[in-house]
Length: 599
Image 1 (tube, rainbow, N blue to C red):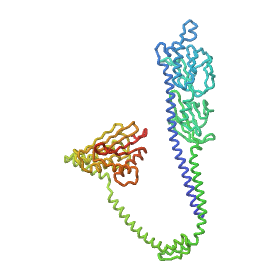
Image 2 (image 1 turned 120 degrees about the vertical axis):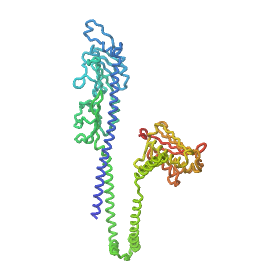
Image 3 (image 1 turned 90 degrees about the vertical axis):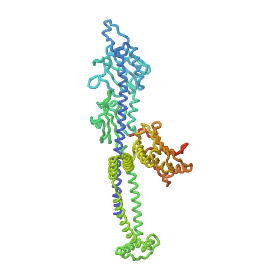
Image 4 (image 1 turned 135 degrees about the vertical axis):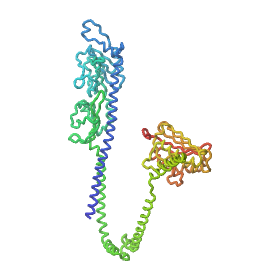
């Protein structure tokens, strides 16, 4: 009994353990793939956002050498010493305020704009639609990293007025978190800086991009510049601060990757994506904790373990009870089986019970005879199986041998100046290769139509080219749509079986392949045959909905519809109707999911 229980516990434990490990590995791989896609998309959105801000700032250069433009107003600005010597100082406030207001309206997340003209130490501030301009000798232009003047994004901080003393009604500084984009305005084509433009943006768009990349309840996300300062952090306490955690030191190359990390603060997977835009260079770092990643795997393992323990206990109790009741009759059966083992198939044992053992005892003689019959039957089945295997081996023909043989015959027809025979053999070989190739279950629509054309070439030779024609109309955009293999030829074959049963005279088969609104493929196959009765049409339509139909035509059309719904869309439809004059039209309506169905 102990061995039985042990033999049950050990495999069950090993199975649960391997199941847990495999689930963890699968969950990790799936999570890495999904999060890599999210970070890639987020990096693209963030780069596009910063690129749009940069383009707004570059619009200030649009008026070079144009009198009255913003750039000209900044270029001709005079310093304070010039005013003291009696030179007139042009009033450029109207031009500057108009340009700053245009910038302010170009992005709904713009909080305020500050322009510092170095020549006159003039600060120009636009906040909430209010413009202020004043002398600001205390303002020191902000330099980029390493003391260079280049456009860059300053990480998130509370808003301030850049030393402007003029007040703004109902506007108190230091209340709104913003990030700043700094742009030096150069005297082109030199590197002399004429003015410093700073645009403060609310975090609405930045937070929207960030939250699209992570689960705010369980995961963490950081946008860090090249010095480790947080432009965005899922933990508000770290926004605008330098992140010093060990996982921050990600590899400089490649552009993205991931690694596992374990310390007292975090245990999980760290995924990163480098950002290298014109304004911001740094990393997007996402932390996925093991606790969240493997929670489902642990839950499944616990459930499996509890179920296993429960069934183990039930099985143990049942085994003990059953073993007590089985001991006595089993001894008798052992004695009987020993007699059977030595060949005494006429052995007999008394039936003392009315339960299953009693029934087994009463039927024991018949069982021994059945065993003997089964032995003979198994021997005969083995002989028959060997014979069938031999026949199967003899019937095997390498498809390549058939192709090569057809090619040899085709070459021989050309040698004897019989191009028509060559065309027919080529069409037959193409059909065989297309039908017997099992590696592909889906093909281009143009390949499927070409297969029908080869089929029709053979049929034209059979019925006469003057009595049979094929018209194909296919939009160029529909040629590269991927469809299940063998969906048109069975329909065309049905035309010959049912539509042209009375003979073919001036028979016409038409196939059209059209795209409707770029998300639906419509294929129609029509003929000018004898058509069908209303009863036949109703029977076929009923057969398409009933999986138990046995008619060959119903099976063929139902097979086409089933494969379309399995491989393309559950909304795929197949309908059949009589034409107004002669013949039948079969319509395939295949919805195309966006981004799918094209090679």
